[in-house]
Length: 117
Image (tube, rainbow, N blue to C red; front, side, top):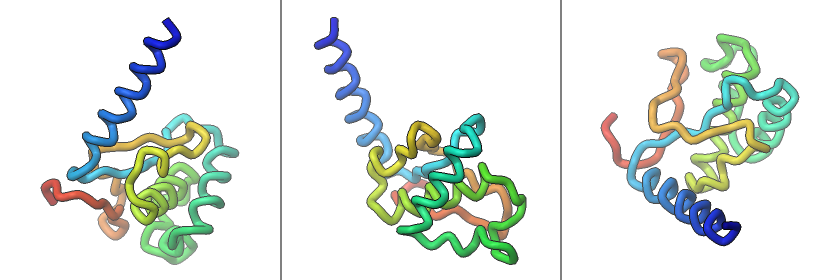
């Protein structure tokens, strides 16, 4: 049973990678993620990616909510680091979305891939 679970997990992870490759994909915060996990992810991601749009006065500041700012930061990190599933693992506070998470016309989330605009 354990071996079966490991094979299924590996297959599932491989399928997610294959699904995302070549399509537009975004890394976003889980809506119910704890605030502390969101802040930790935001701090980590912003060490590697440009999070200036989420700062006060930036195009992605409003709405000023941790889940929105963390989603922007997670996605910026995910895109910069290569769009691999492991680049969207922020202590189980994130997920990969195939739907555009942009929440403000002035704040467009970047996505790699060749899917439709």
